[in-house]
Amino acid sequence: MSVVLAERIQWNHHTVGLDHTINAGIQPQDSKGLTQVLKPFTAKHDQFHDPEVQNDVAVALLNHDDKFADLGRNIRTKVLGGKRFAVVTNTGFNDFAKQGVDPDIYRDTYLLGINTLVGRPTVTSPRDNKVIWNVHFDPHSVGAKDTTFTQTDGEASLHTDSTFRKVSPEQVFSLACVAPDSTGNGVTTLMDATMVASVVKETDPDAARTLQETLFPFNTPTVFTASGSDAEKDIFSAPIVMGEPNGHQITRWNKMGIEKAVKRRGEPLSGEQMHAITVWEAALNRRDLAYDFFLPQGAILFVENQELLHARTAVGDRKRRLKRTRVDPHARDFSF
Image 1 (spheres, rainbow, N blue to C red):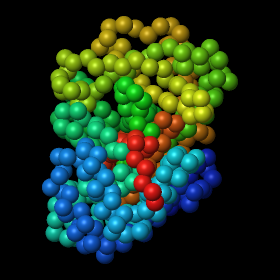
Image 2 (spheres, rainbow, N blue to C red):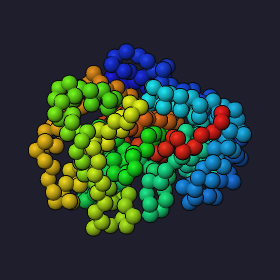
Image 3 (cartoon, one colour):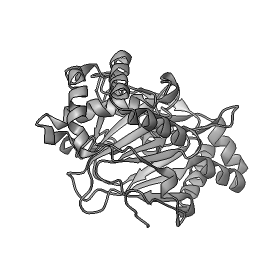
């Protein structure tokens, strides 16, 4: 596996890092000004799900520095315009501790504003309306019946986010690196789901039709349900691969989510569905379709979630911590 840092990202052994990297240009000395800009909104931490609060934070950043208009435009252009992911460096979001404030609240506020430049940040947990989600090892998840990849230090296999979302999965998510894995583990993998679907279609057209035309069940993890109870069975069914008239593909894939849904629903998949999953997973083993990189501290990864699969190797340092935000990009459109 090739692992590369910061501005050089390996794709099929050809270095194309500059095509996917955005230098936000925020310097450490800028943190004082940013702290002042963000301060009025930190008291609204429990209202970050409110579109008006999101808009106000984003506008405050735009009015503070023209760099943020360029940043929002560049992220949208790369992630929604063909590259489908971008690594943003020199973001300044990890510099607030130097200003004698609670760095976590200021980081969350800052990330809310940056993600709002891309679209509308969505609610992860309906119980507390949480928008910024901590990705780190949770000791309470050990032995729990229904955990997510974000709460463990184990390997996260290739998947898309929000497979259980009833309209369609958010098109974009971001991961901001607060603290990387000091052991060099926790490596991110991205894979083009449209190419995976093409491989399946060439290999086994019947399996491809099954993936597109039959409904697969997806479990909603307890941490994301309205009740928060293991007794609640929130299961949504949809094809794994859906095509739209404009050629855009919506992919829902989370094997663990399917397996849990089957178990909780008590209804097995059909033989055709099980065969289609076997063919799909064989295509996921194509390492020539994958690219790997180590997200450095202070960087923010933006990913097109409907056409790219993502994974993570096992974490070797339980102090590793990222912050995830999911975004509907077409719900908000600033005139940059």
